[in-house]
Amino acid sequence: MSACLNLHFVCAAPIDFTKDISPLCAKYDFSVNGITAIDDWRWNHPAEIALLSDIGEVPESGRIVVIRLITPLCRNAGVYLEKVGRKYVWSVWGSLERFPELENGRVNLRNKSHFDDIYSAISYISAFFRVHWELLAIGVETEFDYSDDRTDMIRNAHNIAAWSFGERKSESTFLLLRQGYHRRWSHDLNTYVFERIGEKI
Image (cartoon, rainbow, N blue to C red):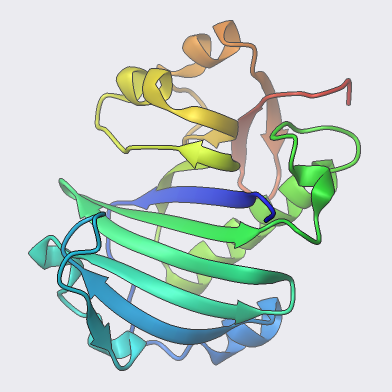
C-alpha cells in the first residue's frame, strides 16, 4: 500500500458550496464520489450527505465533513473539512502509488515541480472560491493539528515537507529555519514557502 500525500490549508472564511465546481473538476480531472458527516475522528454517527450544496452548516455544528474523490491521478483521494475555533481546516489527501518521487517527504530535484504544481493549484482554487488561505502545510503521512499558537503547532507537527503562512513575514520564520527548513519565494502563492530539502536544488 502506497503512502499518502497530505495537504492541509486553513481559511478564516467558509467556502461557498453552492458554487458550480464543474470547471474546477475539469481542470484537475476529479469528481466527487460521496460525502459523509461524522461526529469525530473515531467516525461516530456517520451520515451521508447527498450534495456538496447540502454541506451548509455541518462544520459549524462541530461535525467533520469527509469528501471522497475519484481521480485518475491516484487510486484513493479525498478531503476532510472541520472547523477548529474560528478557522476552517481543509485536509486533502491522495495516494502516491503513481508518484514515488514524493514518498521521501522532502523537496528535491525530482519532485520540486510537483510542489510548484501544488502551490499553483492552491492559488487557483483560492481565487476560484474567492477565499483567502492563512496557512499551508504539505507532507507525506503527516501529523497535523491546527492551533492558534503557531509555535506549538509547528513543534507538534510531523512529516511536514513545506509550510507557508500567507504573509511575507511571520513569527514562525526563525523556528522553521532553526529546524532546517529552507525559505524560497513562490510566485504562485505570492509569499514565501519553507521547505525541507532532500538534496541541493
